[in-house]
Length: 167
Image (cartoon, rainbow, N blue to C red; front, side, top):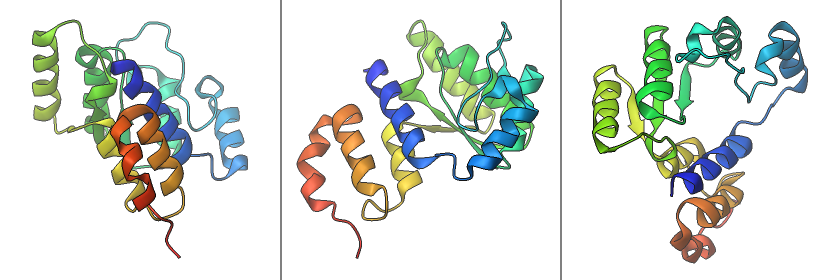
């Protein structure tokens, strides 16, 4: 299930957050080579908090966005540390819990409590996709609904005929 949600979240990001202005992505990439294009994060040599990597923090700031969607290998370390730093830096943060792992149930509960107390919005893959799309009838809705059916919620495929594009 975790793997399925990670794949779905990645595909949602590609559909909903493409590099809209290629020249801006190229400029960001040139200023922050470790960051790659505007849809990717920088590789970290070992920091547990991505914001402790200057290239990562600069690349996030360069996007000009006020909100972040965060998921990671471990909710109790990767997600929690980066999300708390992002909140401290003034971002509104959504932690996608069903696309983030932990080692056991206690670690999961502790991470969720810590994130919530820090002001992070606890979320899931389907809710994030729906919030980004707002209306399945709008542009990209059909594709996103298909992704949800293929990866996140298989039964959603039965609802696809009712998701018709807006005129």
